[in-house]
Length: 138
Image 1 (cartoon, one colour):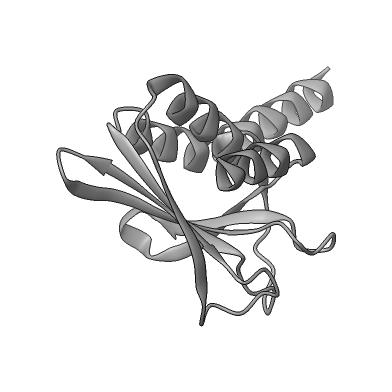
Image 2: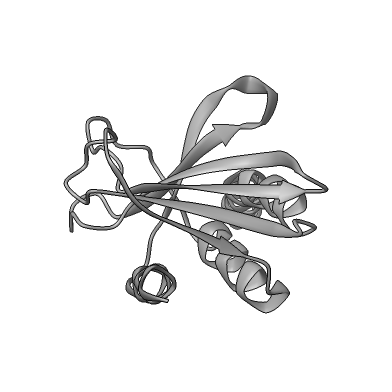
């Protein structure tokens, strides 16, 4: 019985820690009034911005926040980026997110984790990729 209680406690702690970053990120971004998305060339390099899209529709912003905060994963080195997402509230940037969507092995959102300045990552799902591509083509 003690073993089951111990395992359950560990699982609760791991789940709480795993979601802590996502909760903090969601708190920062949920009140954003606009989002700027910079799309890079798509080969992982960050030297060429090929499109910039601005979101002001609250439903689109909320959907994007949900994609970004959905599932944490470990950060991967040397993936590069296909773009950046900048969340604004009253003309001030509240969060910068980097994303990689054109490499099946590195599909993720990456961001600075609060005051620690550690990089954290969440999974960029196929649905999130379709959403970002649809915004780019508008």
